[in-house]
Length: 206
Image (cartoon, rainbow, N blue to C red):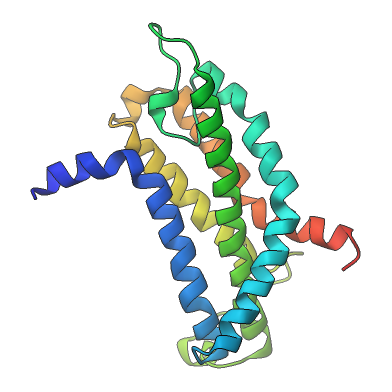
C-alpha cells in the first residue's frame, strides 16, 4: 500500500490510535524500567495504581468532556474527529456532541494514566535507584508535584494537539488561529489531568 494511501486511511483514526499507543507503551515499559522485572506483581501494582488514579480523575474527565462542548459548537476545536464540527451547510449534530464528550473523557483518562505511571519514575529517580544513575537522569528541583507526573500529561497533550491539527488535512495558515488556539486549549486540559487526579485523590485524605 502506498504511504500516501495509508496516511489517508489512518488520518481519521490517528488521534485515538496514537494516544492509546502512548498509554500502552507507558504501562508496559515504565514499570519494567522502574522495578526491573516483568512479573505479575509488577503489573498488578501498576493496574492497582491506575484504578485509583482513573477513579479519582473521572469527575474532572466528565467536566472536560461536557464543558468543552462550546468549542465544538463554535467550530474551533473538538476532541472527536474534525468531521463532527458544524459547517455552514450543516448544524451541530447530537451524535457529534456525544463523540466529542466520549473522546474528551477518554483522552483525560489516557493523560492521567501516562502521568500516574510516571510517578514510578519519580520515586526511582529520587531514591537513586537503577537504572537512573547509569543513564544520567538529572535531579529535579521541587516543583510541588512529581515532575514525571507533569511530563506524562504534557507528552499526551502534545501528541493530541500535534496529531489533531494534522487530522484536519490543512496547513496551520488555512486552519486559522481560532482552531489552532482552540485545539491548544483542549490539549492544555489534558496536560493538567494527572495533577488534577493527584489533587482529587489527596483531597479525600488518602
